Every structure is written in C-alpha cells, then in structure tokens.
Length: 363
Image (spheres, rainbow, N blue to C red):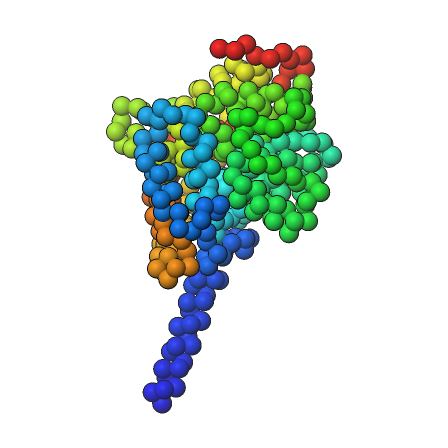
C-alpha cells in the first residue's frame, strides 16, 4: 500500500512539475517555453558576464557619456531578455491601454492596428517598422492592412525569431525583417510609403538621429507615427521618489535617459517633419496600461521560481535568474510610473514628411 501511495505521489509530482514548467510556462501564443530559455545570441557560459557588463553600463543612464556604445548594449539587453519577454509576456514587446471586455491580447492588437490606421496605408504599399523586435506588431499590422512591412532590429537573434514567427503565421510574403541599427538604416532615400515605431526609439541616445533617418527613408507626403516613452508634466525632477522611479525604468529597460514629453514634437520638427497630431494615449479616459503588470505579479513570482529551478539544474544559462529579477523589479517601477502618472509609454506623435522636402539643416 505504501509503495502504491508513493508511486501515485511521485506521478502527481511529475505531472505537477510538467504543468508548472511547460503548461504555465509558455507565453500567450506559445512562442517560447520555459525550458527553452536562452541568452539569445550570447553563448550560455557568457550570459552572466554580459548581464554584469550591461548593469554596470546602465546603472545611471543620465550619466552615460559613451553614447556610441549604447546600440551595442541595447543589443546585449535584447539577447538577455528576448526569450523571457516571449515566454512571460508574448510576441509584442510593448504596452497598451486596458479595454473593458477585451483580453490583453486583443487590446494589444487594437493598439497596433491603430498605428497603421493613423498613417493611412493602402494594401500593397511598403511601410517600415522601426525597432520591430520579434515582430508581434508587424504581423498584426500586415494582417490588418495587407501592406508590405519591413522591420528593422539591431538584434540578430530577434531577426531569426521574427522570421520563424512570420513563417508560422503564413505572412512571409508580407513581412520582411532586416538586422541593422535604426540610426544608420540600410535603406534608400524616399523608399517607404509610411513608417511606425512602437515603444522602440526610446533606445536611441539622441532622438533626433533616429527621427532624421526615418525622415530620410520616407517618401515625400508620407506619414510616420510613434508611441514614445516619456516623462509627463507630472514628473518633478526635484522629487527624489520620482527620480528613483524614472531611473529604475531606465536601467531596467536599456534606456539612455527618458525624454520629457515636450521634447518629442520639438525634435520631430527639427528634422523637418510636420506634426499632424500629438496625444498621450495613456491619459484619461484611457484605462490603465499597467493593469497587466499588477495582475501578473503572481505569474512573475511563479516564473521566477521556474527560472531558479532551471538555472540550478543547468537548463537555463547562469545569469538568467539575475536578468529575470531585474525585469521583476523594473515592472514595479513601471507600475509606479503609471500609477503616479509621471511616466507614459505611449505618447503618440503623428508626423508627415512634406511633399516638397529638403534635407534638414545640420545643427
């Protein structure tokens, strides 16, 4: 009888562990399992060292003096976090306002579709996704608009993941992914019918540089929309708690310094854009975008246990626990930024490249 009880107990434990790791583990679209976590293009034995180098570099983002190194460390960041993001969040690495009666997945898709609707694209036209990640927004936008979407990301691992997902979704004909730096894009002048960036240009050391590149590759008369990470009018630089929250967001998300909301349109105009519309999509009456972070605290705790187990047994690279803990803490800072209203990840700006455009004067 004891042996039967022991067998049943062992079987239940095995089923429980499998359910905990493999059923609970995958992200919304089952794109990545817990047991498949890697360091992206970084070899397993170098993950922890790369994390330490990253953390040292972004410890105080406002004090970063070697701006030319930022793209390399952003690349490192996405090698470290891409699998964790896919596993614990999904294939769209951004936020969206909650919508009553809609799932997080549907709210995310609608947020993405709004971007392409704003730039008024027709089927068959070619548009640019600036900072495409693993292509979640790209696929939603291609399916919705039937436009040809070209995405660019600095991270080679994300390129491979995006291409894999595009193939699985049957969207290879509409979605193309290029590995490159959006500060120096490998595209001809005046070659795109529109462009969008969803919470991506915040990684640029100077917003002017990436906006100038987008301006260059757009056809005259075309529209560009961006959802920007910004500090709002409620942010007080003399408030130590506000500063702590902002710095926590910056160092946990590879940001070389959050920009003030007033800087966005000024920068767009500086490179030659006409500003068509500007709005904080997180402002009331929009419902909180951070709800998903708060609701996900139990999942974060569960996932952290999973990561610790997998790291301990050698399945996940050494250093994965550190990366996951960093993201866990960053989620708290993001939530505080949303609750206090000092931070928005979706300050929307819609711009047009003039029909008769000339290169902006260099400053």
